[in-house]
Image (tube, rainbow, N blue to C red; front, side, top):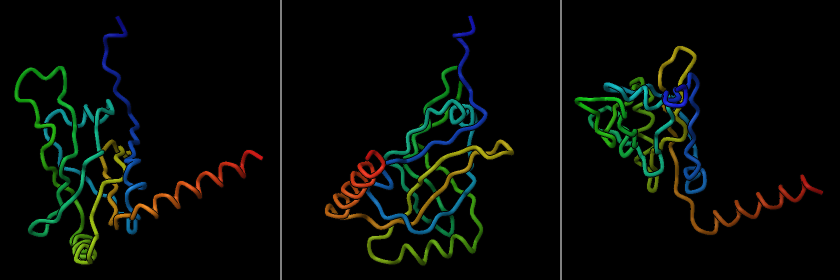
Length: 153
């Protein structure tokens, strides 16, 4: 009987592992998220996909796009849209700093980590980033392999 219950975690720490592989992460910001309905329950169940997610600034507000939060299974009516754009809560000064950084060629804003803080609020860590070239990725893999060999022997 206990196996039928949904597993809801109090502490959540989900990382976007592809982000550090695909981008050079520069500046980090922690933002609150405007959530609807049962989205917080699904986040606590860790059914979130940040793989294709990115952020954009529109009219002085920051939104996260393509962050997939699965529908809540026990919701009988009015389920939330899994890929809806969600507003991020940042200060005006942080948004202005992000806008200035994004004006540079090749810069983007991506989510790196989704977590629940000690007050129980969902927070999204975002970073300004610049895309890596193929040879940069190879250098990172080579450095990681060398470090692994050093630890072994």
